[in-house]
Length: 418
Image (cartoon, rainbow, N blue to C red; front, top):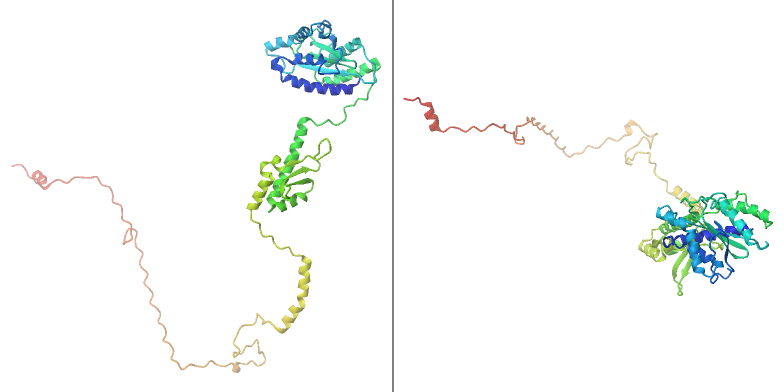
């Protein structure tokens, strides 16, 4: 036995199982699988398909009867019996067909139907589909349509309408096949000790693709924000580590578009996975980037000077500065600014004396009359609150209205009766 073939076939049948499950509402799961196992027209490698074993040993065999269609319907009905019963109670699983293929190595001898039947019983017992001594095991059949392999088809609903527990069935089947190889003298292979790293799952592979796209999308947005023209945008991408850039041109030579890829993101052929800007994001297509950069005004770039050139120019100006300082002696800033005619003790300390100070000349013009002090303006007295022209009008107190009596009424009431 070659378990490596079992691995390939189980994975392939698992994909077929999932594809058939999509047609579960039509009730063609077991029927479609049986039709494939007995088909000799489309599958050219199928020769003499027939049953080698079944759940009770009395299942009808479409390959050994004259009426193939009628016998096939009886076989499918027998496999789906407990599934139909569970569907009436709402307890049937969505994926109720179990399919396993067992293939011998090319160097092994051809096994007989009895030997394949024994292998099939041991595999369904080890995986939990139909354990030994369990009268409520699932219904299954083993079909042989080639000299070197068989197919096991089973429904996962037990007679007690419970679902079979076949968790980790691949490892349990591989363990049983290792014992079968020794007993039957078949080719034995080295099996792993389950210490190697696990293969990445489909979700992990998709996540890695999304991570590469996110990194490319972030890099492109950063380059667009930093560039002022399409030429600078292309220059930035070409000098970015880990980014591969491919520019697309029209026959005229104009830029048509671009594609980018990560240097460490490759496919099965070790080729980089390229993405166009529009695939990463609609606003990262080349026409939209060009329109955006053309609308922005270029900012003035400060002139970059070389420090060595600055130091050389400063050294060359030193002799000119020294000659200018000798010819034009600057005036000390700490001396007081006085007229030349007025002697200054700081300027002439030896010739200074009290008698040498010249008195100011008196002018013959009459002196201006002394300005009289302006009389102080009397300070206005503080006004009391409520008085004066700017005082607020006082609110009148409210008094109840009392009508006054007329003069005649007063006179008539003041007189005494005669």
